[in-house]
Length: 255
Ligand code: ADE
Image (tube, rainbow, N blue to C red; front, top):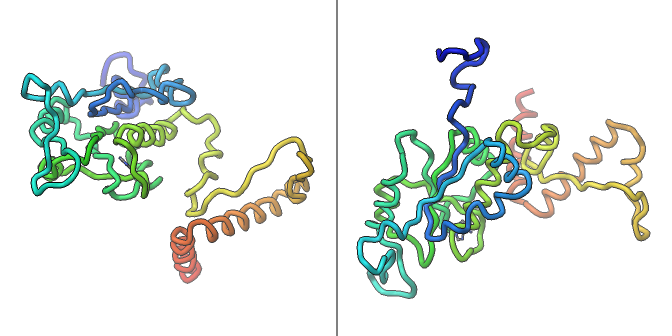
């Protein structure tokens, strides 16, 4: 054990020299930290809770013109990012610590809160951002890169998706969110979307706060919120609702 280290603190928990790190491999390093430099994530960044660094893919182009893409074999619209250039950029990232390596792409597996939790619990992430039509698939295979999507829509590139993924992880890092209970009751915890919230004024523009929330009856408030969460989930996300019911039926059958 290192000298002067308090006895009750295990080296692994001490996080000495080891803050959660995001490495973004991108053609647009100027897009980072971007909005991650503000608010909750920005404060945590300033406080040294996490760190971010970028790798500029263009630095790894082999020719004078700094070419990073080329026309797709087989024809078709758009350009494809070259495998040799991406490979060189990834080699420049220190992978000895075995961080998860993720390519953000609409072709990926949908990102879930469960995966976000795993990523936040790891020492950090390496995120590869694509532009144009995508990346030569051979480099994805060669590096066994995990492909992750933010949803069924297409962004102009992976960078905004990388920002969103990092934000989702950073807010889960120890000490970043003050109110632990707030994150326990939020959407997806327990498999449901979150119930609606209200604050003062009690009457706003003729719209009243639901009576039950003013009753001071904690059990009734809890039941109302549960019913609301179930209703909203059933309406908006039948896929989540089905999963929730299967889980609950399994639980009921056990007892
Ligand atoms: N890049 C472009 N669109 C994306 C999406 N929906 N999710 C993740 N990465 C993307």
